[in-house]
Structure formats: C-alpha cells, structure tokens
Image (cartoon, rainbow, N blue to C red):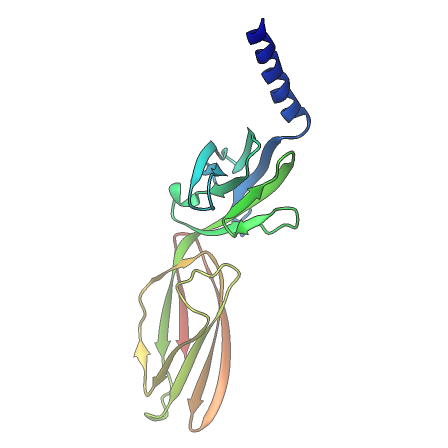
Length: 221
C-alpha cells in the first residue's frame, strides 16, 4: 500500500509540473532569410546545463526540421536548458544564428536559453555559399604613379572572407585577373579610390553572390 501511495504521489508531481507550466517548448523555422526558403533535415538540439555552460552540458532532446524547415521541440524539465541548431550537418551553409527577437533570450548568436513554462517561437538563419572573383585592370594608365585603393564595405550576411576596410593598394599599370573566393550568398558592397595625375576619384559597386555560382566584380579604372 505504501508503494502504491508513493507511485500516486510521483504521478501527481509530474502532472503538476506539466499543469503549472514546467514544460519547455520551442517552435520555429530554419531558413535562408534572403530567399525565405526553409532548410530541411537540420538537427535542432536541446541541452541541459550540468555545470558552467557550454562545458558540462548534456543533450536531452533532439529533432530535425521538416521539408519546409519547420521544427518543434518540447521537454518536461526543471533544469536550465539551451537550444542549438546545426545547419552545417546538412550542407555547406554560413550560419547567421537565431533571429534576435525581444522575447528570445540569446546566450550568444547560436544558442538560446529555453524558458520554463513557455512556448517560445524562434527562427534560425543560415545562407549557402557561392564565390566571388575580383578582376582589377587599369584600362587607361597615366604612369607608374597611378594608384588604386579597394575597400570592402561589408554586406547583410558577411562571409568573413573579406574584412571590412582596405583590401589592397596597387600602383602602376595593373592588370590582375582574380581567382574565385568562397563567399556567403547575398549583397556585397565595395568602393575604390583611383588617383591619376594627382586627381583622386571614388567609385562604388554592389554585387550579389548567388548560391553555388561565381560572381565577377570587374574593377576597371
């Protein structure tokens, strides 16, 4: 009889945890924010912190996104939990991270804290890669003192291939065909300063890097 009483007590404790909001649920989508297309079969993993995060964490629940990139993950727990997403497991993606909404507590760009007793909505962004080729040519060379300074001004989803700022400074009658460099999908902004006969002129250009394709930026001056 005592054993039955204990079992009944445990049952009511579990029911109470669910009833009073101890479940942790996250619904969302993993997608390419440029095209709005979902990314399928991406692992979405919930961890429980056992010591100081990220060291000493335990995987407690896992799901994968459906054909349109949607997911839902839920766990009954009294412990502090975190959610991560692994887009690199399903392809060559540049991970941007969780969308920064006011009601989504970010541990960092790639990790969110899961609230107990709440159903959270969180989307994770990632973009595929293409490549970018930069061709540089002085088409009307004045003399060996001609100078060009090329700057990368960034983009919404920077590939980390180029650091914003001065990329290169070249003198003389330059003709340099470039090679493809891996770059994340999206717009990339450039400008360059050309000095000829002591006169400096600034030019601007924007290119869009497509998934799996090579985009060419011709810097003719």
